[in-house]
Length: 200
Image (cartoon, rainbow, N blue to C red):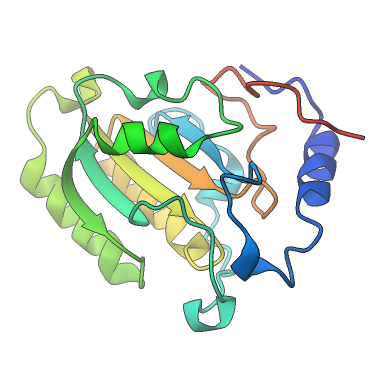
């Protein structure tokens, strides 16, 4: 299902929502300011082009300052009894309690608190080889949860490649919708916004 708003309208809203982003990172509570969105993808289907482009635009973690997070490790491999799309039928806004509910409903098989580079993606592949079972793809029971922020952007395309090659059922991406890449206007399995953003 596509987003009812144009990409320009989406960007306008989220850029207004964070007018002090460049100077106020330490003061930001991403949930309180409704700066958390989530996108649930089937890696076997067509994905937004920004997720596939190893653009080389990530910022060194030491230079980035506090980066976007939702309280989860930046890279998680988990097993679920049902698909994670049921947790997030809408991609914005996402509440802290919705993330807490997810945390308590999956079996974590591997996690990287922060993504330091290629080694973390290589480890994800190793863990998938270790834990995959017959029927995983058909049952949709393996999922990867990825936090997309200024320090992890370069790893995104490699994570997608691993998910596709290992036939992972779902890729869940958490991000700050006011920061690039902007994903809310691409076709989605989700229903879109839970409520219209207050644009204007």
